[in-house]
Image (cartoon, rainbow, N blue to C red):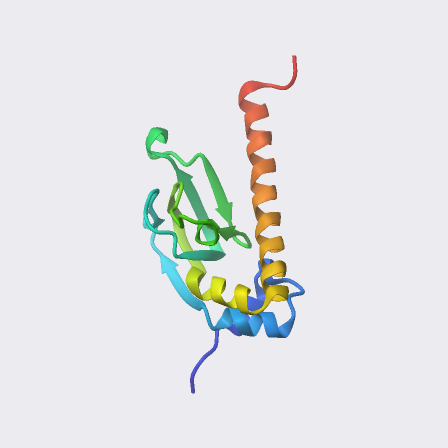
Amino acid sequence: MPTTLEPLLRRHPFCRDMPDDAIALMTGCAENLKFAPGERLFRAGASADRTFLIRSGRVGFELPASGGRPIETAEEGELVGWSWLFPPYAWHFDAVAVGPVRALSLDGACLRRKCEADPAFGYDLVKRILYQAQQRLERSRMQALDVFGGPR
């Protein structure tokens, strides 16, 4: 009996309150993956061909200048990677598993095709991605305040 990733998608916070037809569209692009501690999900400059919904664990984002130290992290319930959505479809950071990570990988080309074919699905998906981006930007601002202090 074939198994489907639909229940895993449905439980992920990124997909909260997503319509059944949208979950079905995403299921067709999904793959369930595990990453060992220190394993790279992707490298800066490489082709951005997917996004990851983190099911468990933590992913660190690194820059070559960061000396292998994460400049930020994403955790269970978050989305990692939206560069597949914007040409030239290349990663801007390295992403590394900080401890064991379980994730749903969604094929970027598959998602783009489905967004083009179903604009309502595409609009909802992009709103969800932008919410994740806004949350990450807000965390970065708070970290900058911690490092550099508030207004003088």
